Length: 475
Image (tube, rainbow, N blue to C red; front, side):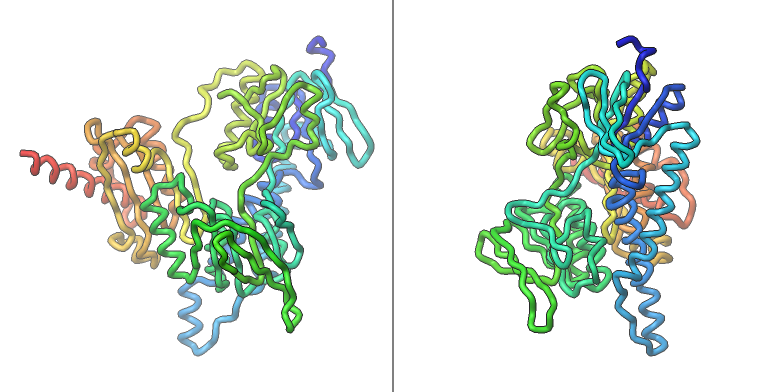
């Protein structure tokens, strides 16, 4: 079909981070763009049930349970009141609504048409939309699939509006439970486990693996686990679910008893299942264009997010790891540039992970475990918040930063941080790695005082001392 005969240059199915950025980028290039979204609101799961709601919930929990507030109430003889789910969610709803409006306004400013309905592929360069106003058939030069993912319910487990939830539905829980069992110690499970523990819930985390967050530097994760245990979180690692039974107590409350394969029984008022995610591909009619997803609903793409069909691209959670909103934004932009011949260097290898647990942690670059496996010579530098003036001012004496430098070139290989503002601090190290900097930069630069950023200087000096000690021992 000649290019002039296409109704649109780009049709995007899904309005989450990948879809948003691709649509806006294409529009900036003067292209005719349409976004198909099945939800009444734009923004995708990121805005409705994922990133934005969970991070807002975290801030609500921290503000209502802040240690200084608790101490002040004890000082005047008042007993702290346990927060309610309604109080914690009041802020969440307003932020979600505002963020959806921001995305909607962005589409309007860039003259991007939004069609409400369920989009599917319908043969070469064709998309069908089953919408509230009836069926519609679109033609497009390119299509971006950005339909995101949803939580997996393993085995015979089923969601229950009273007591069994996933990361997509936990914020619809009717009340704040007294006890919560989290199945799965991945990012979402650990984030919510720490948040609910901070709100005074007795939390148990269960996972079939022996370590939570296995892709993060082990020392940083060990510190997180230690701090979560101080908040009365119990970890049951190396355990797998065999079955679950819902029952009602004599008082009329519901509870769930989970049996593990090793024979243990764990009972909680509510269960949060965080056992992975699968791509939303069922409604896309992939077979009509010769595409096929894997057993987790993921599409294979190249480094420019092209599928095996030349006019179809895919980005975001639909293509699997890393499944971050930040990387999805960039994937969508790169895909749009590739479609319309705009030069682009591709994805940077130095993107960060941010895990919004309590405390938060963030990581960019390589871990000690990776470098050891690859036989790369390195040295580390450690800075602890307890030795930082800003840490004392903030009341955070348990945070830490860890830098990893190449022993010979002294280049920065990785930055790993836990504690206040970790997800902000990591970007300094990310920039230094991307620009090829290392130990000498941190030793010679000056940071504002008092700030958490000073930890880079302290960690660099700590690494220098370690290097000198090894050199002196070798003489």
